[in-house]
Amino acid sequence: MLRDWRITRSFRIWGRTRHESDWRQIRVVVTPCRNLSSRWPLLRGTCTCWSPNLIAVGEHFAQALFQQLSETPVRPECPVAVVAGRLTDPDRRLAAGGPAVPSPAEVLAHEIGHTAQARRLGLLYLPLVGALTLFREGPYWWNHFENEASLIGLFGGLVEDLVSLA
Image (cartoon, rainbow, N blue to C red):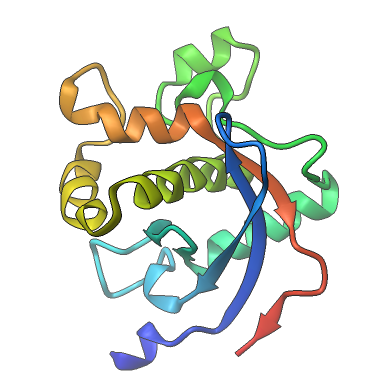
């Protein structure tokens, strides 16, 4: 089971929020424990911001992201944001002219929103946001951090030449 926790690959992405002027490099690590077939039910298929500079994803997500970027490259000059500011509201997304299901790049934009929260909240980020993130997006006060992450995060593509296989 410890093999599930190993990092199989890592890469860096460009990320910032709508309020920031400068792009930041954020490390993304790929681990089997986040795969769709993981033996870890709470991690299965998840992407998680662990700190202001670190996001963890599964191999399936990384493959889908690289496939999307090979078809539609993303650069800081034309970043990806979450359509209609929500990942999980298909009606709102469709009304805004986007697809009902978010793309991998949109999910990363959402996680980049969480990196800004981690910068702002410091050591309080994981216990506070981690506890409330299980409730996902929605209309209630406990959905604030998820809603905000989807509204503010911008994904600016891969940092060139910084993809590594572990």
